[in-house]
Image (cartoon, rainbow, N blue to C red; front, top):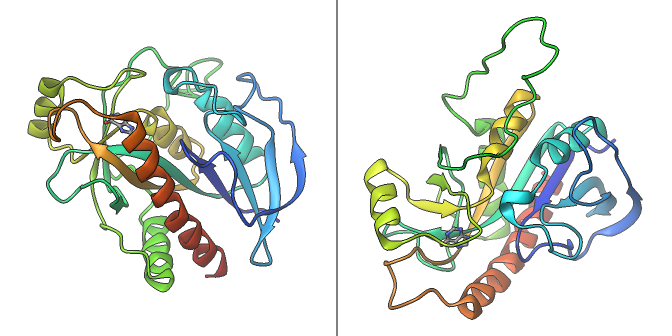
Length: 245
Ligand code: HPA
């Protein structure tokens, strides 16, 4: 039974080391997920994997069908989701190369289908979202990181922006005043949708660059790719330890 699913972000469209057993096309009431769900074995445990941006990394953050993705993972039996995301670093500790496990999120996105609770409701539903990530899942990730020898920062405030453009320096200043220490484009509505379906969801954020205005000069895509590549090797060790736990 597959109860752990990994959502791979930029740089993680394939999970190295995963022995793929089958690909499952899931049709959802919300349309098509980013790709077929990949089932496979990692360290003798069955897990599921879904590349958030599609198998060929062609779906930009504002076009991802987050509702279909989360619905599909719940449908195939996942109860725990580890979401991997590349982010920019805002806080002084969030330098490129760092991996952080955020504990809070602020939503700056707009126009995305962000809830399952809008049609054919027997009553209006408001989920509790005080602590947006599953603390149980965050703790499992931190234990896995420790046993894999992967250093992680155990908290962070993820500011979810609309994209696909990067932010202005002033937008980042404003986000910092709001309390954000990380910035990415995919954290919302994914995190809230997982809560709506009562799944244990947490995120591993791989810092790929200093956020706009925080580094020297413009943000270089080449550098982002380099840090993502390095970070993903560590993420794979962490996932291996997580499935072992
Ligand atoms: N901003 C938003 N999303 C990102 C960034 C960034 O600087 N880096 C990687 N994903």
